[in-house]
Image (cartoon, rainbow over all chains, first blue to last red; front, side, top):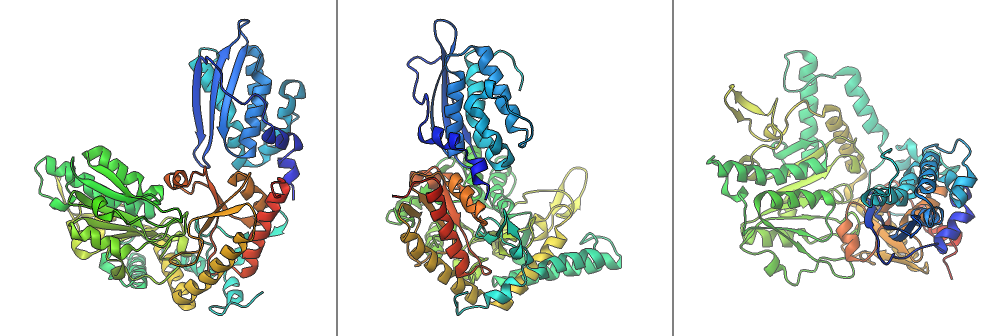
Length: 150
Length: 428
């Protein structure tokens, strides 16, 4: 069985010890996304610090993949510029649509590269993308998105 | 393989070649028949035989193939109707059970719209503010959302019968839920998520006592136990072909002759008319009134073959077999620490669909590890999201065995649950 390819240690670690989970005190936007096929839920809040860097808060309920993905997202986005956040999101989305081919960029994705194996399980891709889709929605609502690319 | 008295599972399994395949390097253990059943060879042969020899559009054309196809299609209607103790003219073919329930729901919203324009319709189908529609808290979305829509369109109020903690209908306040305002009562015979078998006849009696129309979703009961439509006491009963060994793409709505005659059409167009002018049309008698467009001939013939196969095995025997599997599964789950059944924990008035949650694990992860062991189960809210909310769980994992499953299959399922706990290290 190839479960270890799907559930990398890094993913299980983020699932059991989520980074950055919690609420922001004064968010500029808050969005709630669900995965209607399985009921995974995530709430993402967004704000900026005085330097204009992104602050991300989240609360979620769902499978290990969706919750670990939210934790990794928080690590990659929190305290970084909009440009860095959007580069990370684009790289993560590309990786999830690559069906396991291609070499993910660890410099951009950090622990996110552990999700490369998830892309081979079509039913789980939506789980991994859920927090990132919510992040983009929150950025747009707060006028903190760089562009309108999908 | 341990002995089950009711039926010869080994013989049954020879008719389902798909059960011989492996998945992810393990032998397939298919425990997802509540989502869709596997198909025996006779169903595949029936569809293939029809396309090889008799394919034509039914109820039109004067040629020999058209006549043969029409004969096969209408003969399938007789076979499927008699399987549930019904007359062929009371059985409507639909594209699936959801379409059958929408057909029922639209009979109300269409009649209400027509009545508002002064057309003559049966007043039992006219609904509006001050009226109520009653469902239950364990309905599949297919028997909930269409009724919500009727309420949105007409101003009627949706009510529901709540659930007890063990997954049964809470009938204590039935008199105040089904009352003089009630125009429709619609509920499932057997819950797809909880496995509960509901006392449908009692609730239909309550519906009829206030002149409401009674609708039953029998998707999870007709494939698994002997059902006679008259015993349920309902006016309309919906179910599908693909959960009873038949093909996808066909569903059924049985209705009493009197109710079907009183209903306005749902989809309109070819085949369902009596006369058509540019200004207006009149409609055919049921069941054709509800069968617009080119029909699902191969699927009807395939389902008739499935029915003959189910009858050859015996519905009483199938129900007894599933009862034994259910008892074994419930006993096994009760031995697994940290695993909790959502729904009745004994076999009384209960079918074989068993939902459970595993402490510390999301159902998606449970299902993923089970899949890695070759065990196919359903995870998620099972199109019964309000039921999940009732039990404060985001989702469940569900096993749903059928006539072709063995006690070994159940044991493989139980072992796979334990494997998930071990993989995620959530057992104490």
